[in-house]
Length: 110
Image (tube, rainbow, N blue to C red; front, side):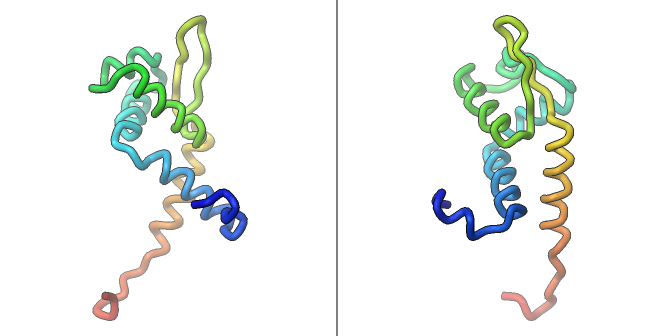
């Protein structure tokens, strides 16, 4: 999606796309599961849980943070990440509305 075309979409469509992009990699889903399980986590702990290098995990954390799904606090040389509850609820609601808007069309669908 080109930057010049985003004004042609609704805020909701842009928000859904942002969340979908952040959720669009299995490593990011795995990171979110670690954070959901532990409630908070140091970046090094996440690296220990996944078969990925520190730099790769950091890139995925950056994507999740840019989407707002996670937040992090710097504590010396460590960054403690956790789920951003407000944005998480927004993602649940926004994606839920999209998925709940589907109604089965029976035999008239392709």
